[in-house]
Length: 387
Image 1 (spheres, rainbow, N blue to C red):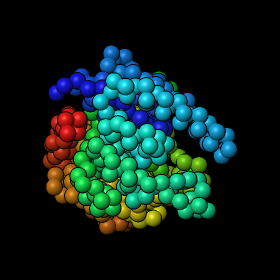
Image 2: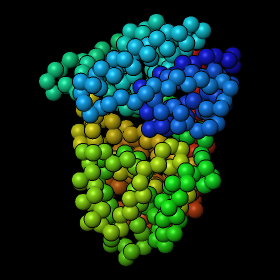
Image 3: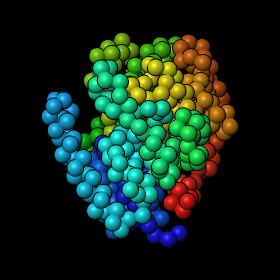
Image 4: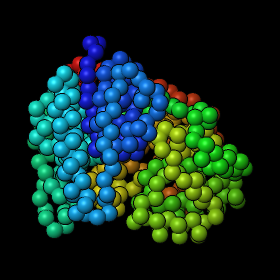
């Protein structure tokens, strides 16, 4: 493989997107030159920041509370980002965007280069003005940019076929699963301010059923907690993740109602993985439909064909899983016997899933390791670069 220079544009906090960190790690491990244009890049792991083939152009965060100030700051950042891209692409081979939002930000700039367009979610359209979507039903022509891209990259195979049909793409999008490139499980690398949180899960006497990720109304933690309560205090539900403002009241009411739910907090990637070592079962409670679309332009099919980081993160540490009955989980769970899908998460269905895992734990643990090893990120990303 000839060494290439790849400019990665990610408009948002890169720390909040583990798949982008995985991409950077993989490219650097394969001796590619990487320029990242993003926010919070200074919080990336030292192995990335100190790599001689890595360059960071760090964008400052903008004020999202005041809509007018936010627009003003976004316009200034767009100008900086576009100028940076134009400068870096003078001797670069590929411009790699990581989200639909990034493509919307850059617009026609991406049409000038060999553009790899990565999508984190399943989307059919993108609003021209997301905050004003209720009042101005104008759409950004993201399908046009997709048809002009060198490659489209998605995290799940069903999404690839759906995007191809929706956007009339000549080539089927490449599938790049959301698998961690490195599993950082070294407790010595945990930020000292999180030690109390780690001590809490380490000292837990009950078996830990862990949920890590987005916290939203569609996760149905209430039903899970009620199911666990029927198991005579043998299990506890631990939750990790950032609590959005819109969900805070509901979430903290939930914690008051169920003493078997323990909220650990939010830990930036990849430090969150260290906590996984002390769990017994990993939880993936996705519910398909409009309730799952906390961003209004995301398709209601998104959760049906979910492609969570967690399925690989849990598998990487040997955690059997319980999930809802959606195809994105059902297919790998049944193919590899790494988890159980429940038609609902309340009562006997959830308890039966726990019993099945208890009876087959060591086998499922080994299956998780096999599933994790079966995905070769190096091969996939090098193929994308070679096409």
